[in-house]
Length: 365
Length: 273
Image (tube, rainbow over all chains, first blue to last red; front, side, top):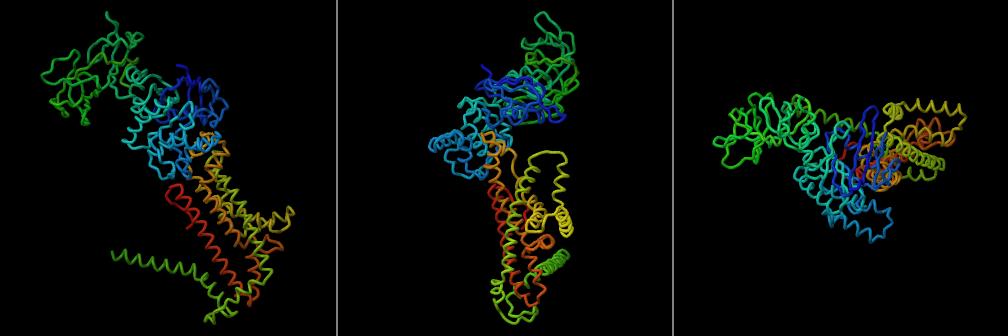
């Protein structure tokens, strides 16, 4: 996979505020890449630096092998879908889509065909003559997509494109965007603060905090091997339990305060942590309730339900385990024939040591 | 309930009195403009259009109208252009002491015109600029520009910054983005600004009186005519025409502004009417 976009040592300051800290990033051709992080983490600034709307204070951006230093936004092979969509309200849908084509010197027929094709692609065939300001949010988003994609950019930049849509629309567009990206084969870079959205849509995700990239990995990699407790807590939910790592005869062993010991999975890099303080991450789905009449699990603990949230298909429990400081969160599928426990009920909790994620340092993050 | 209704009634009486006070003198203009007598007093003596006919053969009046039109058109163009620059700077760019600078630009809005007029007169005499239509234009630009900025600020502020970036992103130059996206969207504001500045300049008296030199503007000419009581009905007739024209222009300006709001699909807020 050759790098279509390469950033190295990218720095950006807004006054004294360090918005981008030494960003190194390579994004391949045809990749669906997401920049994920909480608001103010610099992800939009990074996207705008690639688009050419923010000049870097250090480092470089290369697109398709060309240094983009001093290349303005209108001469970069990138196009952007803005958070507000930025549809030109005084133009029709077709005029919006044709806006970037005017400079290409196409004859009227070819241009109309391209515009029609782009609108067809985003599911707005026949909407060309409509006034742009009369469209719904979802339709505006599609026009913004068509307007950018009709120029066949090397890279499509999407700045929180789904955040203004209601939930149903957002879920539908997530699927459509993903299909569209596979169809056109253009590199998409998506900025989002919604970890679920990033996991669903991306080939790879860069997680950003405070202007720096903390981790770049595939969705599964990020979820299973978060580089820090911060990442682990940001992507999905995670319980943090303190303890130590010991070296055993068959690999590494986790010694968790209040829960006892268990072997660590081979994909967890525990070696540097041997004998030191460690924190173990446990996803809610790797813990489960053991109901009366079920066999005792290998790793089990007793406790009491402290709180519960019922979601219909799932129930999330907060269980205070005997000997463990903080209650742990666990999720159960609501199966027929299994009771839903109430607050105050005694609970047996089984945990799967294979799902333990190990971090350095003590304490509950 | 009764108390609330009583209060509402009192406010209604107040509102009616207020409107009468505001508009009764203006209503008198057309009444006496069509009255067949040189004495401005009731009872009315009969209907005539004689005063309007007399308007047609006063060369000094015609030249005053032309002078005023010329000054008003040039003033409207210059102050709207300055207004565009200021409104764009205020909404698009960050620069030091921005609030202070914008405040200072808007001050002529509240300065007593007589002070502005006298100060300008002193300055022009000091630098040896002869009083003419040019000096009136300079004075009028000074007082019209804040109005233009106020109107244009609204137009520029309601624009999404991303619109311009989107145009650049799609391959336009900075100027192209301004011309193809920003300008069409603020055009209703520009037209409204032109019309307001034109109207203000057209009936401005104090600055014109101090700075107009040997070419009087229309208001200055009218003021001069008041010395001859027998000319009063003619002045009334002219006043009637001016009031009608002013109202038409203001309605036109507001229509353009509202059309602009509707065109962008926004909801209406502010404006003069």
